[in-house]
Length: 226
View 1 (cartoon, one colour):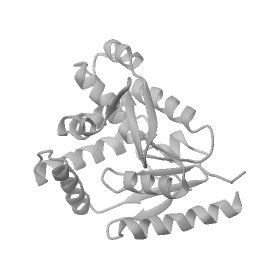
View 2 (tube, rainbow, N blue to C red):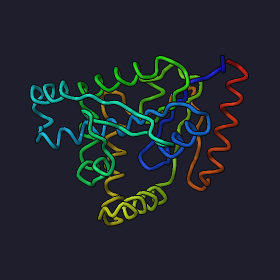
View 3 (cartoon, rainbow, N blue to C red):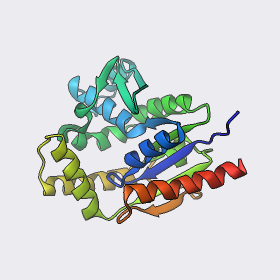
């Protein structure tokens, strides 16, 4: 049987975690679990249901309604919320502005961490987020922590939104990143921190190809050990 490992990728928003995770999964024929999309899906559901995050009873009831599932369609992963495929709905500025707030709620994190751990019980998974190496996949054989300078992150996200015809100013994207960085790194439940055994990678100037090549070398080194 071919040896496989689990790969955890953490870092701030817009550092290229999802792009790297998807590329690694495709190159290795692994399953990609987009934890950020899962939190966005929950946020989308809460916004759609008009749930106030301060109303814990309503929030817990809405969480019980949620069923999340990933399906491989062609060469890409599709996330389904209660049987509905979500794509551009997850990247609106309304979801961008609320996802970090809902992500701080313990009930939300507990539910999604349980789902993520269950999905990754077998080997051969790539997962990216903010607490993957420290909370979700603590035993992952390879842990990566991506950083990137703020202006590069803003330019990349602005282009992503423009390509999807989602209107946003450069400054609004920048402010959104600053706010999310603060919330993610200071929240009481599972704050964004680098795991002690995570490899730090600055993705400010690397091309996607160079980053993928380097990480595939890291995977090959780990497979020699495991």
